[in-house]
Image (cartoon, rainbow, N blue to C red; front, side, top):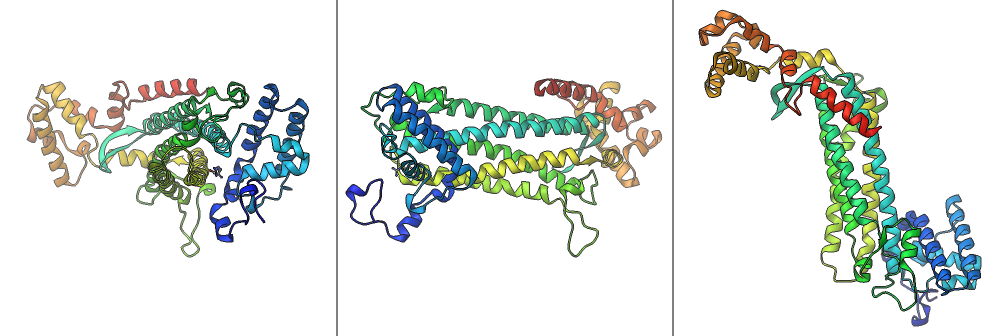
Length: 459
Ligand code: ARG
């Protein structure tokens, strides 16, 4: 049989393969509530503008609420033959309220309808990302506060560089996730315009009120160009870009947790609740959540690239290619939210192993820079000379199989005669971190300032 929406022009219905490639209901049913919200706003506007009668608009409103509740309770029978969420809802509305349902699509197209629904859906996800990021930041702040003055090795090239504080390391991620948050807010602000009323591509000759529907749906204003409104998906791409950057941050931290929880590092103990065992090796406790977070970033980047590829060659305005936008965004959103929640859970539950962190901080000549700085400050050596003297002392310690603080004063003086015993003060890791009080530095006093600041921001 031919289609109930456009059967006028068609003698035959689609081939089964055509139906399979064409239908989006399998995934776009996730936009049901957004679709119905858009239709309700449109119906109310049509009545306010005298385009449909008040009684038709009231029938539409009630009918749409009925359809929504059928969808929410799971009674609704989705049909692949009806292609997508828009036609599924409209067809059911027809069954529920009869003739007035046919007037709902006046001055509207599925092109502005889908653009509206999808914006509303992405906007909800941006709001969910705000909560997810804030929750994670709170968990990091708690860790930072507990270990503001714990000392651990700071790395470059994953080689011991200089001692830093645990609090400082946690707060580094607070900064990163705060920038993700600000990107989310920017994206939301930019995308919050209404495509509804752009109709198929050119606007409509009906006296619609786009300001009214925009406001009813919580948009700041209607989009100014109907061709643009129905054909761009930059808001979805911006969502995916923001998600990708945030997932990259999550992935780097996940990688650190994998390393830190290993038997070779033992910097952290992850909770049982966020670990798994092995079916063969009884001793194993694996950081699977961290590994999966690290992996999820791949599919989120993939979604971003996939949608870029879909969009890059499309002439204006709508093309069916754009139906491929939703699965990418749905999958990326689901996995970003899941990764945020899993990271929050791991961070909340994990235990930083203070003694191991501190022991590791002292190893690997981590205070060599402090020694060089001491030579500059106390003996007035040019930094390059101090660097050279310190390098010789490191070589000497290495040759003796000890750390810098284990060298005797005589050892020190054999390299540079003017060195005095108070050099040993700067070789301890606690003194080292405490001395780095420059703004943004790792000293506990600076870290605590940042913690206080962020606690105030997050409330
Ligand atoms: N399911 C379609 C999509 O996701 C809805 C828009 C269809 N518009 C059209 N002209 N065929 O893009």
